[in-house]
Image (cartoon, rainbow, N blue to C red; front, side, top):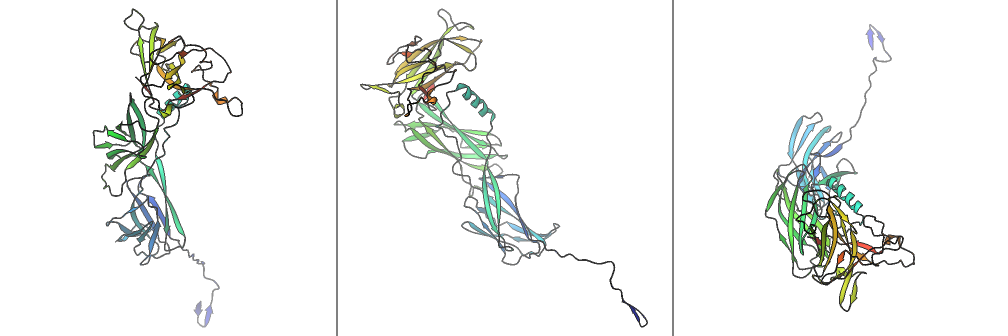
Length: 481
């Protein structure tokens, strides 16, 4: 109001009109990794950022973390928490106190006024799982050779990829009654695969470990143990180096030889393990070794298949476009085992035989297999029993050519279904194998009888009849010399 003498002037409003907005910022908790991707098995840093908002952190306020046993927090006396303004100006720094009891960890927060932020880092380690998902070794390969070739070509192009582990953390904050659920994804830096190698009856196991991460590791103390302890089997290490460096995107190979006194069982369950540490330098602490479990079924050598190619009579060497003699020797390595007891087994006064089918193919087109390339034989189940087959092949190119592939299958008789109807699975539809014929009717004139063996079967085409079944041998049961 304004006065002039005794006169007072009063305005109904003051212009401009002034308005005020009052707001309250809720506290916010943010958890993020310090790297682009978290790796399991080694110490990793996780950053905690608290925007206090309208809440003032008091003495005794804590964050309660509920975590699993596979994600322990690594305590460090040098861990600190920083209090700063929202603009980033540092105000104070205090030691970070962490108390753990079972799956619950308590983190004491430093004093902080409203509308400030608290930052600190935690070091955690995600333990590697005891087993990794692996394809079963007992998977049978298909009798379709074209499908097998396509699968092999695809496997060469497919590179191993990382397997991830998701860890969840439940956090109770002092400013709310609700829990905050945080999810962290850890990538397993390693993967592995195995390969069974044979040298006659001797067996070797090769384990290949891949480093899929962006950092290098020092590997040491590789071990291979039998999990089931079902047989007296020893693993003789062929690894000369106790420690090996494995850099990013590289592979390291390990090799063991199997030694046994008695024939091992039908199944073998093993575990490969190797300890590791980053090349950047970290104490082992809680780091556990990388493990990989594998199973081998029916891996003992049953048959030794040997192939020899001879030039024509009177010639010193094979020539392009000239027929040459291919002699295939199939030798039984061991006596009758449980693996041989199938529908094809014939026991006559203690003299046991089984039926096998052989096939000669050349996928690389270096040889032309002339005449019949497959047949069925009756093989005695006695050690050193031998059956020989002779075929004619023609080299198509000059040079040192690899031999054609010789495959061996179990030849099982046809079994009608219980309903009496024909089982469509027993009809073999594979023109590569050329099995649409009755192989039991005629004698194979290209096969030779030898010590402890009987005649081979020939072929005559009978379309549409129920066919016997072919069952491939397990890995390692047939050794090609």
